[in-house]
Image (cartoon, rainbow, N blue to C red; front, side, top):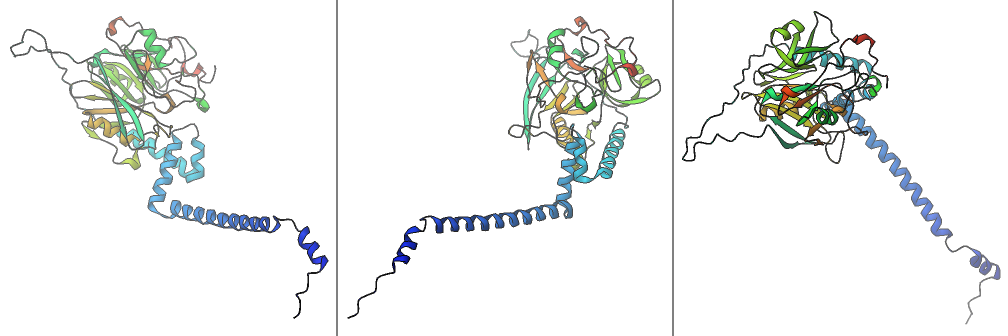
Length: 385
């Protein structure tokens, strides 16, 4: 019987000298390469599908314009051109401005009926009916946003605060504390070059205590205002200075758009809501109570923000018969009892602003001097720190 031959010595040496993990490493390298190739082509396919959805479908186009509108409200407006193109960006901004102007034209005919103190007719009569607190705050939330509604039950208790020093705006929390106010929210817009302005140069006009504090318009121009007259009636819409004087406007700033007039909303749907952002708005109920809606934004784990349609619907739900947008974005802030209630989106906290609507228990005692007296608006440098 033949014996099995032994392997050659050289073969044994070759087997012994081969590294143990060589084959495994080759398999791993080959597997990783195949995985990387598959991943690359998967990403290409996903990217192509996403691009096709964004540019070739109705829902994709809506989403693309939503992102663009949202960017338009930020300091990174220029990025919107990479989503919809520069020409479309310019057209979009012009369309919104035209639409906002049109939303301020309809004549406002709303009237207010301030509540009168009455006596109870019950067995415990003799005591006046309990009045609600001057200021009440409630939380509101919806899809992607969280915020607050502040109700001021007596509109005649509101005054417009301005900064303490020339050359720089002031934080709303500082104004509330310095003036001795109960509460406050940010007011009108201001010149803000590269979103690094000093907050001292308002846009349009500022009226406080019935006096024109700032006029960046000229004599015969009109502007979109948000304010209150001497009787506590809210004023919002497009007016000239002569009209505002004839109407007895007490406190006012320039901003737009008006979103509710004569009890009806002017924004048809979310697509016309001018993107998603932190928001501040002011409205009024038939009983005279003023509503301030403050929505936080740009904080994905907390609140992304709201569009103007969302704000309009919150106002209508709370009984507003007139309402208008105020400066929002990183300016949005609500202060009550010297505490900031909301979460401002600015990484630096509160911004320095030229105006704030402040609530006082005794507004007649508020000393609010005109910080712009004697200054020519053309000479104010909004970028000077």
